[in-house]
Structure formats: C-alpha cells, structure tokens
Image (tube, rainbow, N blue to C red; front, top):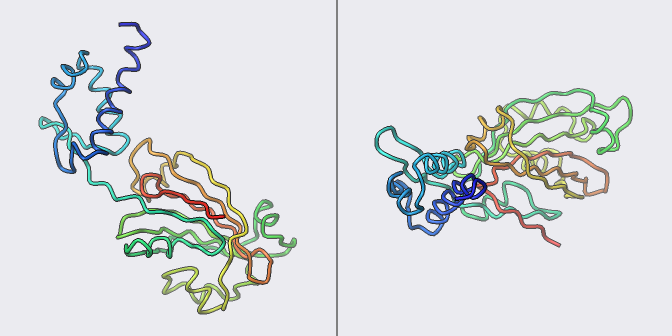
Length: 240
C-alpha cells in the first residue's frame, strides 16, 4: 500500500463510521464494531483503526469506554437557524418546539472599541452595554452571543438585568422596539477553550460565527451581535 493511501486510510475508516451512524446503522448507545472487526473489514492494521476511532471520538460521534469499546453518542437534531431581517435566536428555537433558554453570563458598561463605534455609528464620548449571553435549546448549550448596544438607546439597562430571560423580549417590553437585522457575516472557526467549555462542544468541532448589525426600526444601528453557534446543533438558512 502506498504511503499516501496508508496515511489517509484512517480518514476513510472514520468517514465510514460516521456515515453508518448518520444512517442509523449504529444507533445511540450502541457499540461500534471492534478494532479487530474494522481492521478485518478494511484490511489494515489496528493502529490505523485506533487513529480513525480517535478522530470520530474527537468529533463527538462516539465515546470510548475502557475495556468495552466505543459507543455512539446521543446527538441533538440540528435546529434550522434562519437569517432574515426579523428572525432572532429565541424564535428560531421555539419554532422547532424546543425550550429556549438564555443566561446572562456577564455584562459591562464602557466605551466601545473603535470597531464597535464604527459599526454602531457612535460618537467619541458614547458608552455601550456589552452583554455576554449563553443560549440553549432543551437545556443543551447552543450559542454564545456578545451583544453590544448603545447606552443611549437602552438607558438604565442594568436595572432590567436582575431577572434576565430574553434580550429581545426585554427590548420589546421595556424599550418598545425590536431590532431588525441589517446584515450579517458568517464564518466557520474553532472555538476557544473557554467557548468550548461553555458550549460543551466536542473537540475539533467548528462553530458558526455570525456577526450581525441590527437596526432600530427608525434606521439607526442599535446592536452589534457576535454569535458563536455549535455547528453540530444548527443548520443556517439565509432568507432573501
């Protein structure tokens, strides 16, 4: 066997295992074939199989149990995440019948960065509220969002944060406006250690980074949001 094909065989094996899981040939809680059985199937040595199983483990598909083998993980069904002018995280989750959750991790009131000031069209002496929010679906952590809002648009916001549930519900009920998405950029990236811990994401699974500028119904920018979403829990749809 050529060196190149040998070195990539573990990818073929891992793709086979993942495909079998996706097509329900290996179900949640079920043990995948042993190293010996997979080595026989692919006519290769067990070191290649170990490398393949390690990759499948790092991608969150299976969990190895010492002396017993590797077992298929239960994985939440991806949530359709629609990007349009009027959609928001809570509505995307609730449309699927799942329970939406939102936890305010921390907040601050401070001057914006130069980038934030540019995006929000703020003057030199402006202040912003910066909210770090962990959002979930059926109690599964799904997204980390940093929302930056001009302080003049949400005066005394700190008084509303003791019983925080939903940012947009709070904006609607207290400040009587709902932000409208002006534009978004979407990119795939790997989470930081801290992001991975909060999202409980498997090692080596990328996240979807969506940065959005949201406008006040009157037209001025009112929010800069950076959402880091688990790619294994969301499928993005862009509406035109």
